[in-house]
Image 1 (cartoon, helix red, strand yellow):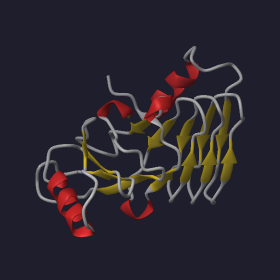
Image 2 (cartoon, rainbow, N blue to C red; image 1 turned 180 degrees about the horizontal axis):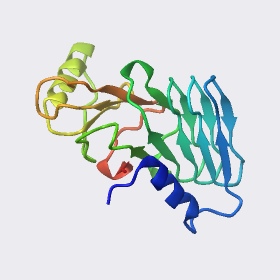
Image 3 (cartoon, rainbow, N blue to C red; image 1 turned 45 degrees about the vertical axis):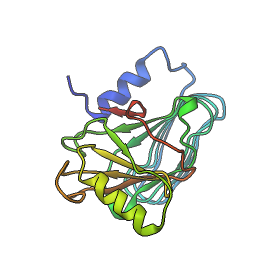
Image 4 (spheres, one colour; image 1 turned 180 degrees about the vertical axis):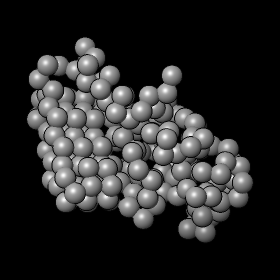
Amino acid sequence: MKLSIVQWLMSLLESPLWASDAVLVVGNNRGNKLTGDADSPNLLSGFAGNDIITGGTAADVLIGGAGSDTLTGGGGADRFVLDKFDASAADRIVDFTAAQGDRLVVDKSLFPGATATVAVVTSGGSRSVQASRLSAALRGSASFIYVPTTGEIWWNQNGAASGAGQGGVVAVLVNRPASLAATMIELI
């Protein structure tokens, strides 16, 4: 059964994993600066605008919404929700850390045909070599392409056809981890 993003969030909030002291913070259409509680799980949603959203030390859910947002999870196993696609306004995720259990949550209704498949572009070489490697990865069948030298995560909308189709950069991992595995992507 496919869950909508709202159903997924509600099931998460009702699960025993979330403490009764969980904090919900929702922004508006302006650029918001949202900061969660330091020690409680937080659900932080910027809604619209260019937001700065910061979680605490617990497992947080961060949703940028429309606009170019900056998301910082803090400690804990955080979930960064990719709930929009606008290549000109990709969210910036400051501290994505696989060792903490961080995950990208992808709303499949916005990324039709997406699967939890990731190709990682090999680092090193000149810019033209990197561009060539990205181009080759975009001709592959992976739904998402990760470029460690820039931190960019690309949505490969058209699969093995040349280029990204209607896809493009969906997020930037500012801390540029060396790799991004399919197990770090949760499709809903």
